Structures are given as structure tokens and as C-alpha cells.
Image 1 (cartoon, rainbow, N blue to C red):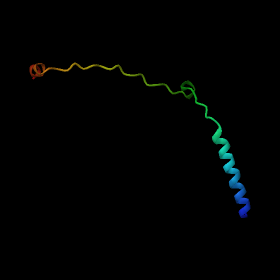
Image 2 (image 1 turned 180 degrees about the vertical axis):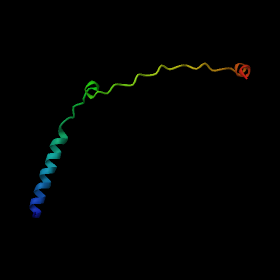
Image 3 (image 1 turned 90 degrees about the vertical axis):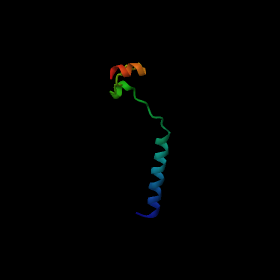
Image 4 (image 1 turned 180 degrees about the horizontal axis):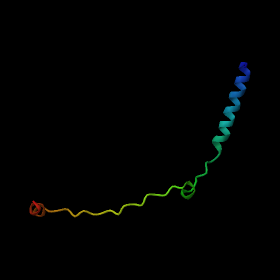
Length: 58
């Protein structure tokens, strides 16, 4: 291949890259992707023990 052919190919590829870069990507919905979110665990609030309660347990 001559240098001119290589240069022409490079320009073609760069032009194609530019055209592809302009297209906005479609966002797939979660249902289509088949991804189900993990069920959130309910937060359990811990009651802080006082010094007296800790001593009683011992």
C-alpha cells in the first residue's frame, strides 16, 4: 500500500468515527435489560444501651 492509500483510509476511518460520535445513545429501560433492583433491607434502629443496662447484662 502506498502512503496515499494509507492516508485515505485513515481519513475515512476518522470521518466514520466523527459520524458515529454524533449519534445520541438510546438508554435502555431497566425492564428491557432484565435488571431487577435488589429489595432494600428495612433499617433496624438500634436502641443505644445506657451504662446501667450494660452492667446489668454482665
